Image (cartoon, rainbow, N blue to C red; front, side, top):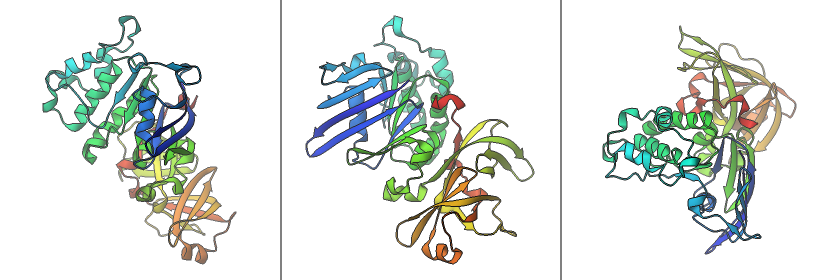
Length: 370
């Protein structure tokens, strides 16, 4: 499945001029408020007619202004999930779910009610009404309703923005299951580095209505200069790893990655499972000799491949660890004292406790990029 967007449009004083193409399982539209993310997905959904351009989903042309093509929103077979669940308050959960099937011709329905209920873990909720649900439960039902419309594409407009951290942690694994277990491409709007790094296969970064970067998540998330100012402390490297085993004595999980073995707090996941981790640049220390007598357990040998100025006294150091790049944010004084130069041999040091719940998530299947 692929998504192609090549449009230009003006809303008052705001102009949007965007082109990207993605075949990823979950493509994140990322950027600060006011960058054009919601306007863009409204054009994909058919809620806004762009002034000029073309939109395709899996080769099916939804918009082509040169050819006069504009498929109405009700014929696009696109599911939408918003910040608020928008469930019908007078209907039970089961009735809300069945409503999702109403506008899809019977011959084109592929979603199975029981399978969707199982995927999202909402079986115990079927007889309740929305007023009796938590925020996370409402969003799972909203996702289920969108899936039961048998969409060709799922659009999610900051679906976690209205939830507290506990509810976000509750629903994230279900979105990961949706990404991994269905064939439906997802375009996911967010301004959260943690969400994007954890879930996205591809990222399109927007600023002032334009694409400033796009590509695989692990590449785009290393561009700290592209992150909103308030989120730059969350930026860094994204690594896909595999569970090698568990240390039950000390409550650790050992992950294998291209950069080397990494120990994280114990994960409730089977040996051999894929796990994506985020290593924030602010959590990485640099040593020029292998440290001893240190509490940090993750010590990765590498080579300095990039030195870039950061904000204020900071400098950002790219370290290639067996081909995987880890970022470190240190002071210019530290760089000077360590005499760091391109090509220099160093060790990236990462504390195990820096891998909290927000920095680990289910890994993407191997075939996700194909």
